[in-house]
Amino acid sequence: MREFQFIDEVMPDVPAASPEQLAAARARVFGAVRETHPATVRRVRQAGGVRRGGPGLMAVLAAAAVVLVITIMVVAVPKPGEESAVSPVQGVLGAAADRLAAQPPATGGYWRLETQEVTLTKDAAKGYPVQERGNNVLVIGRDGHRYTWYEAVSAAPYGPAAERAWKKAGSPKLCPARGCDPNGRFYARHELDQALKLADGLTPTLGELLALPQEAAALRARLLESYPAGSALSRDQWLVGAGVKLVAQTPATPGTRAAGYRMLAALPGADVIDEAGDVLGRQGLIVQFPPARDAVQIQLVIDKRSGEALAVQEVAPHPSLSEKTVWLAVIIKRPYWTDVRPVVPPGCRAGCTR
Image (cartoon, rainbow, N blue to C red):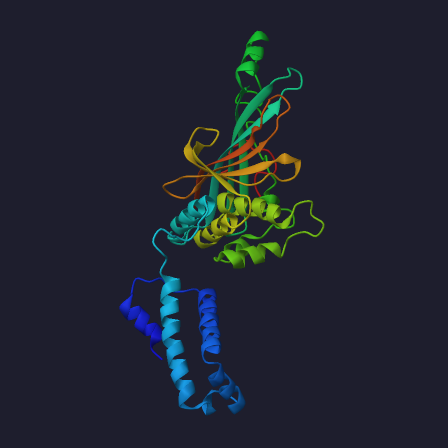
């Protein structure tokens, strides 16, 4: 039978029907055959199958084939003004996934991630919120070596009320910041054995990370193999944390990161904020997910043009503020592979290499 070849020749631009669409179409066609030719169907059943059905059956099946072709064409071609429903999140993350998937595989002996961490704290002595900033470097080598160092950059009162209180107190120097501890300018802020931790129960090796699936459903299934029993988070909440970390802060392959975007797009409750940005003011799109425990809401900020992650932000109530705000942000400055072996800054405290 050449029905599907016929479709390709007559309507080359028609998208291929999915297996689900084909199954539904076949069910409708042969249901119609049973309704319109019941005698023939009974004769086929009595005869024991298609081979003994005779010419009447062949005519019915031929007609059914024609109906099947027409039905598939109707299924494949959307009606005018009836495009398939795609949520804003699926549109944003799908486009980002397409851009990532088109990237060539990375080369180099060391993956290097440079970030700026922004934390909103409350100065217990002064009673007003303070925003701290610091630069963090993480390097993971294919040779098994890891490196990290952090430098505190600045601390400043957060918001007009806090600034007024700070000035009223004489504008004291706030720490941690550059110059606060000249003997310990660089130190390891994060544990190197947790550098690739995606979520509770899931800390892959570099090799395991690079071998993760590059298809959304398969990636979801692989990640959920590590979902811890008795977790306070639901599977979807757990996947939000693991997926966002995977796409934004790991050396996963472009294909795996693209699959991660599509996996996140399929999670319920996600939303998109257009014409927004990160805490540094860089413009992009914010994909935010429903709050998890402690009312913490994860936001993934994406660059519109490249599809790359700009930042990961956590939004929650703050005791010194009347509304929710970004209390923790990891600004993605420069992730890349290189063959240059890193040099740890002089005087970096213990824990900077492994």
